[in-house]
Image (cartoon, rainbow, N blue to C red):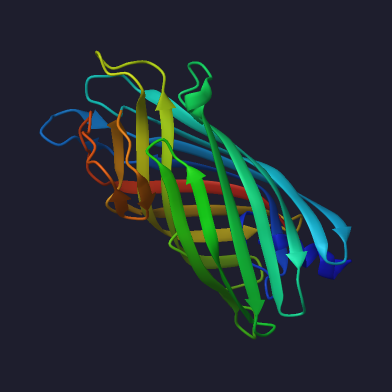
Length: 297
């Protein structure tokens, strides 16, 4: 039974084999220091709240049904002419994890989403994504993974090739979770309960904006973030963990458009150039607090 549960940790792009835990519930809250708009004296302060729930169900020795839900909320003034507003994405996770052989496994998921300002819900607020991720287990301490993520973002279909690995040192102190270009987590355990780490998270999200700005309709917010954090984590005996992180945003953007492109991949957009309807603001320092329930296997 324990082997079956370990297989489920691939859910939501987590890593398995050497990893001996699953994070079933996670909530985090992040603040950014004041940022300045380009060519304006106006300031913006961003707030973010995220949540994730994992609910795996074992079907048989080689197959598990994967489900759950994620919540992402960002609040701020995305245009110097407007007051603070918030955008929210809620994603349902539906998929399966299959053990193809002793060395190979795969996770395949559909990711339907509502992503907007939630002023009203229409077809422009709905998105459909999916991910296919293969894993090759080289040894008890390292595995490799590769796959593809796709989503119907509001600018176009967005494709992200995925390449990564998981490594746990023989003494169980150093852990590396790498899933490029989405996430990197490197950490070192100083005691059984405490660890220090470094984290990178890169995201592209789009949110439908239902209220027009002046005469502009069909607007959407394109959020692109690259966040670097150093963190301290402490775990209790009951599985509840606390994490305090400080860091910096790098080349982030929160841009409003009402035009689309033909096709997109990370850092590359094909088709007509879009006209930005708001102003960029600067990067800033970040502070994040997380609490999560970790089930040890």
